[in-house]
Image (cartoon, rainbow, N blue to C red; front, side):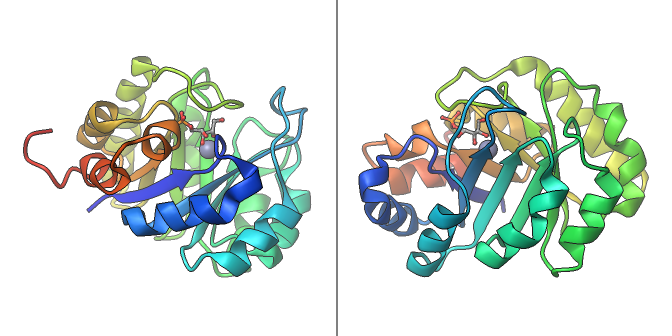
Length: 222
Ligand code: DX5
Ligand code: ZN
């Protein structure tokens, strides 16, 4: 069954605790935490102190997505602040193998994120370096902002990656992030994704629990 990770990027940060409650009550499996440094992407979001506060408040695992230029420098600090999944971009400046090893040394799953404009073949050589619980994060929008429309051209890349993982007899996960709603979640799951990030669709749903079920594909009508 797909894991649903709720992105708080577009939450009202004056009442983050309320958003965390909503996510937990809705039945999501994790909180997706988008970190931006203003260099890797042209936007700034939040970082370590906010993660520490959220960690104390929610029982859900926190899935930290680093959209920063030098993720390796920050691995230890994000793990100490409460990251339980930690992903970084292949397009960043850190060495991917060293970054994977740094994350693994803390005993948590590592994710390699791929922006829409990057050839997915670029991450194939990293498959043997990954642990069983690791994942790829296929961006289905340009990283940097929530509420953007899904880019369907990423779907064949997800299929290609999924095929390559199977060919190498591995069981790595594929997360999708950006513009995910009930319909695009289905398309991504059909293409091979099993970790689903959703921000604006989930947080603005009239019935967030129903939105989680639809994203997960618990309903036969979607
Ligand atoms: C974009 C972020 C996403 C974003 C998803 O840079 O990585 O996690 O918050 O938000 P929605 O679901 O609104 O596209
Ligand atoms: Zn994200």
